Length: 356
Image 1: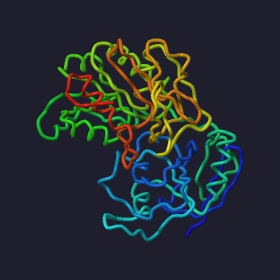
Image 2: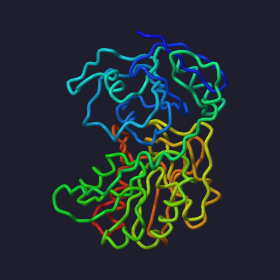
Image 3: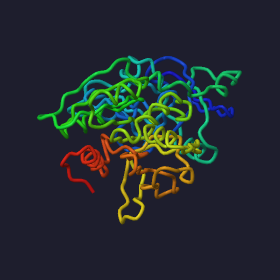
């Protein structure tokens, strides 16, 4: 196994072994706490521009299964404690190493990921490079910015997916980096889903005869997507609307709210979310480095908060016939505690689904 290095923007150097593509990469180093679901993590477009580190120590043990892909790979690198070279699973098609090589993504293993996670939690996310030799000049690493990534991950033209069985509703899904399971969850509830690029004008949605609009997850700083925010402002109050992750953030900005970058974000499948005024705490899947400032919410009502740090996790806009959540109710491989929110969206569009 070849020698490789993870070098942080503060000059810290970690020596490990390289796997995947034999290439150097620069990105924003983030950690995710999921114990399973590394395939879904690697194929989540929301990781565009980032080097992803898994806190769970053994990765690759069930190989790669293409039916579990959520999209194309946009992560810039992959960091694990232990890489399993010989996976064992009846669904396995090929190895993690082959997957990364075919997509030009470098990986590094053999590092103390616990120490790296503690460092990021204490100091905040920072840029890093996976490389074959530590660079003498770190300016390129330090100056790297995750920007323009929605344009990088969105689809290029509309595509329609049929409902499973009878078509009950027609939904326009705006793709800011959409995970495929959003479409699956809608289709299995009787929705015909048309996926549009992030550049779609609001007028095309409003004139399309749709029963509702879905705003997807996606990567990067929500505030830089000024065109998307302006289009959502035109949709609000004119069509039932459900936003997830970046879609949640963009809606809040369109309604006059404000976003801020978090110290190290929420990434993983074990994030607790409490419903305001309710009795339940839901375990959710999340992947975001920005949050809406709760005090900045003007036209909506805070509905969900993170049980760990109190940050905004969901907003209702009853006067605008819209609601949004920061977490992923479509999460695959789970948890699925909040999938009922899709039923709520169907009900908002005039359907007969039961929701909580």
